[in-house]
Length: 280
Image (cartoon, rainbow, N blue to C red; front, side, top):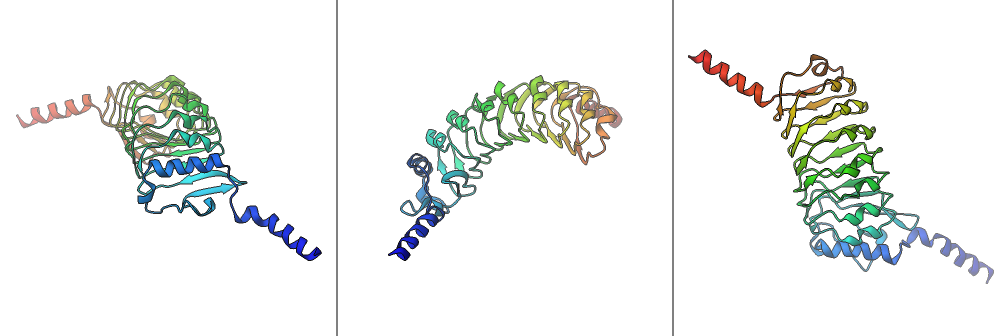
């Protein structure tokens, strides 16, 4: 009898490691996502009758969902509001699918989030206005969607953000001087949008920046000299905007710069004019 009791105690001890013990609320949130994105046609489907620990792309730690990676899995549909019930989620990757609709504002209540990757989908609407609530966020990768509107004011509160990659969308508006608050940025990629206005000189405060891509927008004025403070910069793409004048040599010859492109309408016009004169 004593031996049997010991066996039962042992089995109970290892049970949490064998079967997931996530809450019903979290499980319901996962099922909502499954159903709202046509889960039965995913590349790797979930067996809803099996233990959640066996579901593709779901990471469970200490009986709670901490990561969800369903990239390239043929998700078709929308992200449900109930995703907010994954309250311990750190990493969310739904990239390279066919997700439409908006990014639900409820996602900004998941304060544990460190990484959001929703690239290569068909998402519309604005970046949630309360995105700044995610103070632990290090990656926000939303490129190749249909996202529109201005960058929300709260985004400049993301002092821990290292990667902001929102290229190839329909983002409008200006880049705020508050960009200096995003001191952890090493990648700032905004190319192929509809942004305009002057590049704030405060961008020179982003000392960790390694990639700055602002090409294919409508930025104007002179390129701020303060870019020459970005000593870690490796990639600088400023082409196809409305900049005037030339770029200072101290910028184009930054010590670590390996990829550099700069052209503007004024320069192109002068070149075309010069060519036509020479032909005459």
